[in-house]
Image 1 (tube, rainbow, N blue to C red):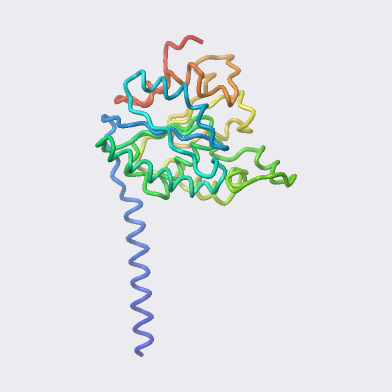
Image 2: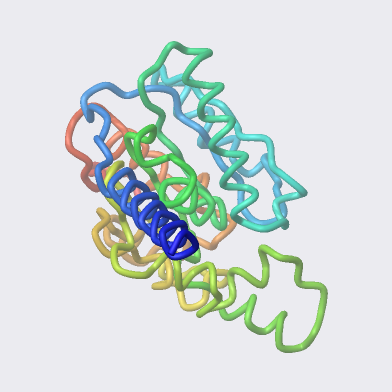
Amino acid sequence: MLLVAVLLVGAVAGVAALVAVRLTRDGVTPVAQDEPGPVLLVSGYGGSTGSLAPLRRSLEAAGRDVVVVPPVGGGTVDIRTQAAALGREARAVLARFSASSVDVVGYSAGGVVARSWVRDFGGAGLARRVLSLGSPQHGTSLAELAVGVGVGCPAACRQLEPGSTLLRALNARDETPRGPLFVSVWSSADRVVVPPGSARLAGALDFTVQSVCPGARTSHGGLPGEPVVLAALGSTLGAGPARPPTGVRC
């Protein structure tokens, strides 16, 4: 009888712990949308931060505080490891700027890292807005090809294969979980995120470069410097409602 009682207590405690986790996860209190804080820029697969320079210049010219998140493991290690590191950087930035929230711009795989942080590593209560820029949120066939032919394909590469365990978990139920406002901007001419529509996020403000500038042939690598994208930094990351940019010189 004593053993049964111990087992019952343990079972009840386990259920209580699961309920507490669920309540904590589902009971996120979103941060204020009218108080923009610092902007974190997250690089893509491979970890090159040079491509983020146009984004940084544009944001700083608009008076925003900008921090480029140092890539972890060359941007090729487990995306969850990168997401946890993003969380540590976000908390440090909040303290540094005495801010109540951050905005995150994730370029390419960086957008997947940002979403992993929001869903599983505490970002839901810290991020105000998350801008996913040309991100393979549902995978890319290039990663699938790399896995199939057996070439060098590190952890993050394998996780960007369509239908990977990581992406199935991120896309289960709600693709844009409670917390920040999500925006996804992408190019229909992208040849790295294949198909380009993999960048779509259900529940996000979602638009293509071509919806603003028809006929644009913006490549994946050209997204950070694309006029539509730079204009979108102001129209989606400002204090007002997020919207596609207008008046862009195509």
